[in-house]
Length: 146
Image (cartoon, rainbow, N blue to C red):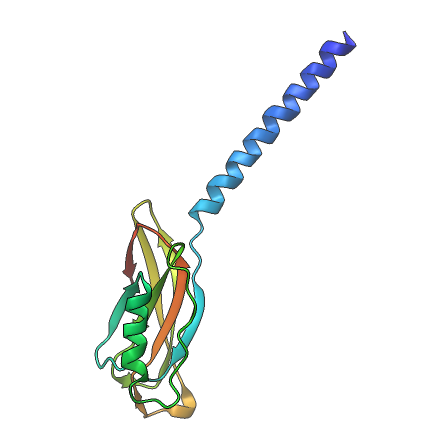
């Protein structure tokens, strides 16, 4: 009797531990976190644009446009494009503001990013072309901005 009670106890522990591990796996794969890389007041883009960069050549091309009038230029951040992608929001030719992106919502097929524009008081009245750059885990979801 003691042996069967012990066996039953082990089965309950085993089953409950398997369920908790399954739940942890699901929550980790759904998390899409943006990692801040860089921001600056000159993007070289006069109009508002959103760029999704998926390889090193695209990233170097973007920095080529930014750095053509800078000495020294901004360093190109290191990104592992096998695992990550880069999102860039060029704010366009606007009054001085800081740009921020955050994950608003995600579905099976779409990743929604929230745009935030905050006025910089010490540069009020200055016209700049700001940009902000983030990396996030590579995904096949469509990225949309709101």
